[in-house]
Image (tube, rainbow, N blue to C red):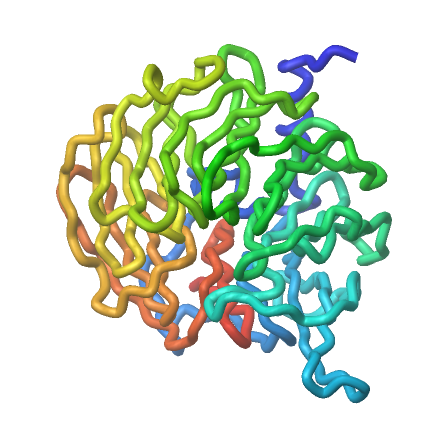
Length: 420
C-alpha cells in the first residue's frame, strides 16, 4: 500500500493523545522538540525542600527519561545483581515500571530481559533509551539487549525481541520513535551500523538499512526525529560521519549531509524554521543547520550555516522562535540566530558543568539541568537573562519530563515530582 503523508501525520497526532487528564509527555523530549504545551504553568524556583510534591526511591539505575500520559508515569530501569555461579559476572535485569503521578506509588513492574551486565561508559547506564507511549502501549527499548511492547495498563508483555543485537561501544543510548506502522531505532555499534524498523504490532523486522559510511569510529547514540517536508515524511537520523534522511515506509535513503570523522553522536536533532539542526559529535563538535529538501549527497548544497564553538557533545539543541540555543558539556550557553547562525551571546550558566540531559521549554522559559542537579532558568531572547538557579543536590543525567504544573526528574536513586 502506498504510504500516505496525510494519514501518517494523522496517526502520529493520534499516537500522542493522553490516556486521561491533561498530562502528555509520551516520549523523549515530549513530542520530540523539548517544548511543553503553552497551557502548562510550571514553577521557576525550587530546591530539595521547596516546591517538591513527592520523592520516591526507584530501584536500579537508568538515565532514560520518565514519560507521562494522563495520570501515569512510565519508567525503565536496570538492576544488577551478583551471579553466585560466576562472581565476576553480574546479572542484569531490565525492567519497565508504571507509577501513579499523584504520589509516585507503584502500579506495576515488569521484568523484560535477563542478561549479563556488559561494560559501559561510566556516564552511561544499561537503561538509557527512553520508553515511548502510543495508544495504550509502552515500547521499552534497551539497545543491543532488546526491545519490547507492553500493555500500558497492566505491564503485560505483548511482544519482545532480542534478535537485533549488535556490538555496542560504551553501551546504548538511542531512544525509539514511531513512524507509521513501525518502531524505528538506530543500532550504531562497533561494526556494521544500521537503522532498524520493527513492525510495532508484533516486533517483526520491517526493514534494516546500512549506514554505508566510510568512517573509522562507527558508534553513535542518536535518537531519530520524524519530520514532514513538502507533505512527505522523513526520518532524520544522525550517525557517525553524517546526518541521513530516510523514507519511513521503506528505509531507503533520501539524502545525507556529511561531517567528516564525527562520531559518538548523541544530541538529538531539532527541526524548526525549515531547517534541521544537528551536531557532529566527537572529537570536535560542530553544529549544522541543513535544509532538508534535497536528494542524495547534499553536503555541498544544503548547509545553511555551521557553528564550531561551545557545541555540546551530549545534550540536545533547542529552538524558540528565531533563536537557537545550545549548552555545551561545561556549562556555556550559546544563543544564535536560528536562520543564519550569527552569535547573540555565549554565557556560563553554571560553574559545575557536567551537562548531559537536554533542555526543555515551558511557561515561556528555558530549563537547563546539569548532572549535579542544578537547573538554570533562562528567559529566551537575544540578550542573556538568567531568572533562577535551582538545586536538588542529587546526581542525575536524565532529561526532565514536563507536567502541566511542574516536572518529573529521574536522579540516580529517586523519581522526583517538582511542583507547587
